[in-house]
Length: 110
Image (cartoon, rainbow, N blue to C red; front, side, top):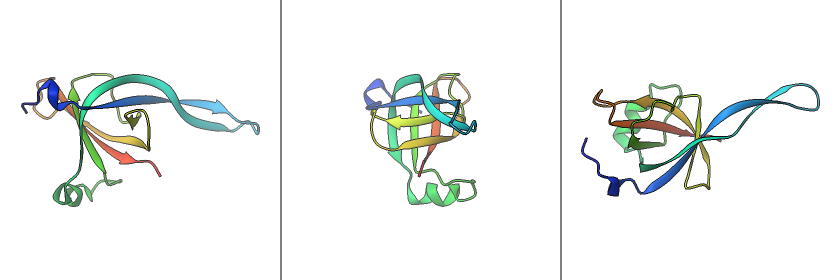
């Protein structure tokens, strides 16, 4: 993969889950703590990629590529450019195994 810094045009903020107790003493999971805000290359998935992903539990709606980080996991949620819908991180992949880039598949949260 040969992406330059100029390809990373969108910012994504990743949020970690935390449990809060509601009035009835039940637990609710909220995503309010920002883990990181990073520059990414954002792209919607092609029809072919979507069909391949059909075997996954949830069908990803976007893929982001960013500089390698070891603190991003599938427990996080993401938001593009600080507005709009939230996305679950469905997968985290180091495509060439060299710890230079990560590809994350994202699923929009209804």
